[in-house]
Length: 187
Image 1 (cartoon, rainbow, N blue to C red):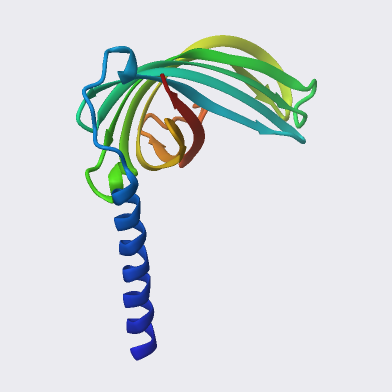
Image 2: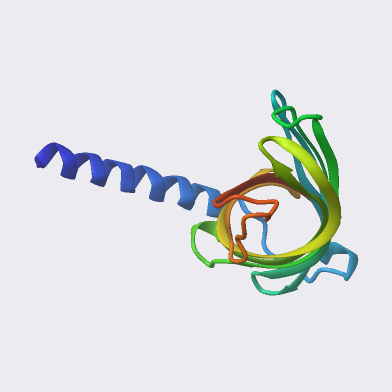
């Protein structure tokens, strides 16, 4: 029990010291112009093999108020599955609107995320692994979750988020939980 307590105290002091030193090196906040409130970035992802998936999702956001940002994005995904006869290939595309609130703890590194996304995707109807029908449809997704932002220098940040699709249906393009990683650049 004593070893566990010592470890927890040591970890807490180390973490608190790191955050204190980070806070000391930040420059005082200045009044930013409109262009300074914008940022660009997005996500890139890839998976190769029997199931291949490539994701390109750029975004543009704006700082709305202290800790609150919002924006729009575009999503394009290529998907291929060799388990079907013939091999199933498709593209998904669409747009999204999002809000993020950076919590006023840990130098605003933690954030809450809410997003509405509408993707056009190709759905299939199969019987015993054989594709008998393909059709395109629109699928809304309501994504909520939390994440962590890390400054990597200047106005460049890496974001990692864990999201949950509240509209998780069998033909949804996402399976819960959704893990996203991306990079954002302040203008």
